[in-house]
Image (cartoon, rainbow, N blue to C red; front, top):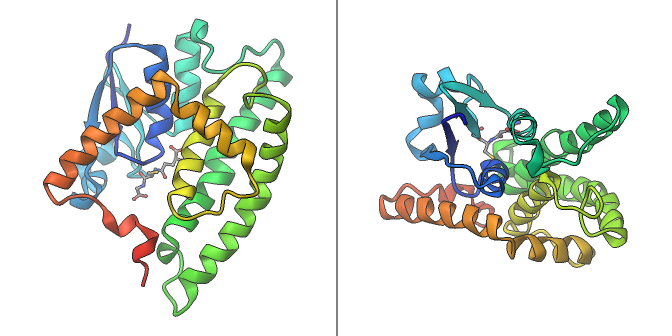
Length: 230
Ligand SMILES: N[C@@H](CCC(=O)N[C@@H](CS)C(=O)NCC(=O)O)C(=O)O
């Protein structure tokens, strides 16, 4: 069993990996990355991930960055846990990875534009425009997911998988930024279901502990709150 350390921050997309690790019930350490101190831009962190982004999972001293790489690696190491459904053919695997990649490639950039639109355009009125365009595209992207969840309990079918952990994080982030959930009752119900899962509760408890620490030190990145835009 490799020694595992997850570099994470509360609320960040590292939650997806955190949920996967909690699902596996393996022993792992966590390392809180303090954005407000620029820890992710330090030379030490850049050796783990030159992109200066979390999550990074260090396994026996070897860093893996990018959620998709971490999740597929964990799935390969612990196949019985079924973090991802089993694929019987290369085409089935390709279809599965295509579904998984949609989250970091298509949805995550929209999450960022909805939460911190001022990082993408600082012209007068720019952030508001970025927010409204990203919200519209996000609604289009979520529509097929909503339709899928009207037909089946989990994204991959009858069984929970890390695809559901990714959707959980996207929904948590955008509704936390005021995204209107009215037209997405199945995704809302899916989110409530994930919140009740023990692995998700444990992941959130770890984040809560980290957030409490950051707050006590005045290091909570409140600038990430889009309500403070004006
Ligand atoms: N494609 C990466 C995205 C990672 C990412 O954007 N992480 C954010 C947190 S949600 C981050 O570390 N941001 C810090 C920064 O960009 O300065 C993945 O899927 O792991």
